[in-house]
Image 1 (cartoon, rainbow, N blue to C red):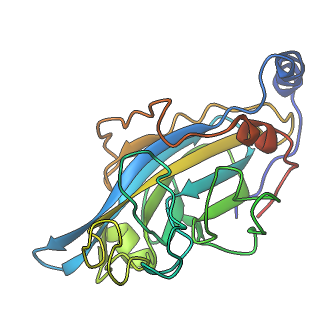
Image 2 (cartoon, rainbow, N blue to C red):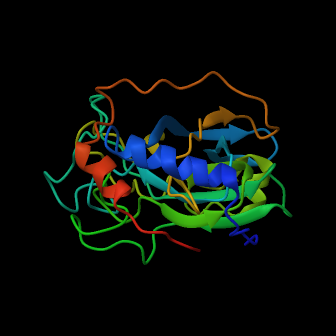
Length: 254
């Protein structure tokens, strides 16, 4: 992890004043993006799944939260808990997922990885703390809360297990969407060929607590922008509790 300069220049003092005045108008603002991971076949690597890349830029050292919502059922496989599935994004289908992402600084390479995120100890029973405020149904939805320096970052996002070599190559070799075993009770299909996901980003200035605009953008593995993915208001609904919950979060470090 990179060192963080904890000095507070005049500019940051001014930002603090602005943040305090804005607090009465707006709580923490999270940026959300949508995507889909697909089963695919690479002519050289064979069967696997796709990898998506999202870039964002921090204008100052910040506490950053990246929260995933993807799994639309409580079970690891179809049929384990009949009736416990929720169409989170309102697209008329149910997809299961066990997500993982890797975070890089500047660009994606074997030498620039900062950290990776899978389901972990940040999760507690629904309704309590980190990872559940976005409406996640299961702890297999990845979650990261860490401190980062100012700079440019790229996320490689995919299905578990997304190892560092596959994240750099841009193809999750041998993966078969791990959480979708058995027969889909909604379609009758065996397994599934894709899953949908949502990423929520929140960054607060490490010194002032002011919200930072991340403007996440989907990019190719080479860093070129792809067509933006819109987030309609009716899709992947987030309650007002999310903004309030994230706004009350205390400073976190990796």
